[in-house]
Length: 218
Image (cartoon, rainbow, N blue to C red):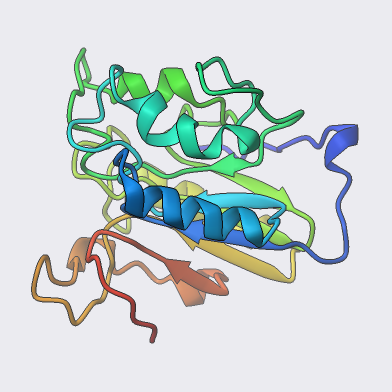
């Protein structure tokens, strides 16, 4: 796949520093999500990134606004939900999780409620995977679900895109976001060998994942 350049709007003038909040496996309308959202808001982040499972349990159109927009509409643009005003420009950058794929349909099947709800940088992944520069940080959102049409192996179309975009980036910080952890000590799901790509060799600074419902770092 060819590399696609991302443009920056005047409201998104790059800064020397950027504060990012990262959340994952969060999207269910309950008090714990409200507590986390309040914590995130208290950090006054420049953007919110996710590591997937934004919309439990089935990624449906009926639940996505209550599961996401209710708590994070101030970061989303354009925001067309019922919970208030959206952001002047988009500051919410999710990745797909297996629950977001729950109601996938079509040929090929796609997670349409997610794709309809968010407006994300365009590219060969058609918003399923994309990259975005946020000041000195360049984020690369990857779809690690087995239903991804462009594949999830290290030689897939999607992996070729990531390798090329990482190589082209001049940002001091390059963060890869995905849902299924390549490595984890959790026994709930375990490591995902298919996603054990050569991230460091390709130029990534760090890889952030969700799915395992634990906190650990390597």
